[in-house]
Length: 152
Ligand SMILES: [Zn+2]
View (cartoon, rainbow, N blue to C red):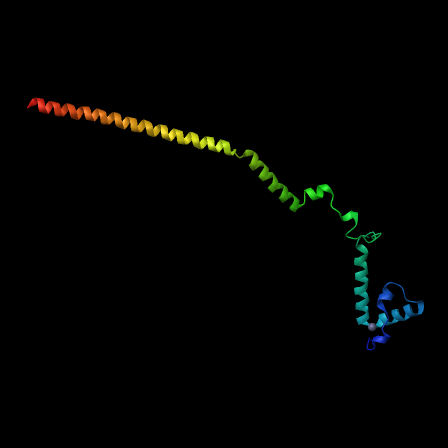
């Protein structure tokens, strides 16, 4: 026997699940004994059922939850550890630390004033030293001139 007419084929899913009546079940067994095509199909269905039976059973959800439900609202610690909040907090902390560690404008002004006065004091010393050298040279030139005149 073969499966030339699809209407004559037994419902193999119902057969494998033992949902056929006694007469239909017996007819299906008779067909199965002679039809290699259906024999393969039934073997595949049984393999599928065996595989499914190895999966662990999951408890059915008791009710459908909506996104607006309280369950989905993040708790305070979930908000704190969310990337957006963490990045914002980091920027705020950086600004705060920068503000605390940054020297005030008065300190900057004082440092600039001190540096300028140091440079000015050094310039005054250098100019005084140049004048002293000039005076020494003047006296040397004057002595040389006097000696030259006196020697004549
Ligand atoms: Zn068949």
